[in-house]
Image 1: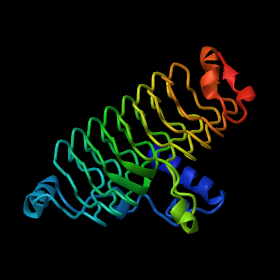
Image 2: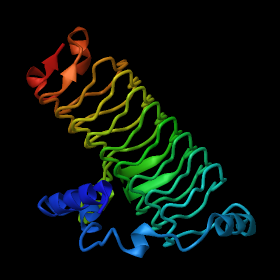
Image 3: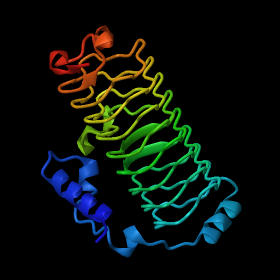
Length: 260
């Protein structure tokens, strides 16, 4: 079994030991080595044909497109709800306004892709790659644990907890251990998100709200802070620039952060 599969299964097992949540329930009893999660039922040529026939509103909901190279294609407003796109390549693709709710996109590559105003609800995107991608204005309650988000644009995006779906568990953006170096979060909403051990060197957090976020162990050194809301943000063992300490006013456990 490949290392990715082992890590994912271990992560799933860890989730089962945590308080129940909808995204965690999605991981239960899932065989990630099965054809549904590891193979593709369409070829790139067939995907392109579907895009042409759909006239801009292609429907790939529930499809298995794992591992396909779909780089550079235009999926604007396409529906990928509950699709399996693990390890698929969307480099340079256009997914503006696309629906990616409940997709399985583990280790998928969205480098340089445009996902402006896309919807990513309850999506499994652990270890995915979004370097240089544009998710401006997107609604994101996806699990991006371990994802590469270097120079990714989240300007005006909403990653905050969805308080209307509490019966489904706490739906929120999860950037646990993600690498967001140089990412643009200007005016983004990250309230109540999980940012534990995430890295934000050089990230633009101007006007962003991290209120009540879990940011234990996160690295904010070199981040651009201006009117950033850290009200109630847990900074236990986080790493911050000592010269910017005042910018973290209202944060929880600020005294337990490493000021360097």
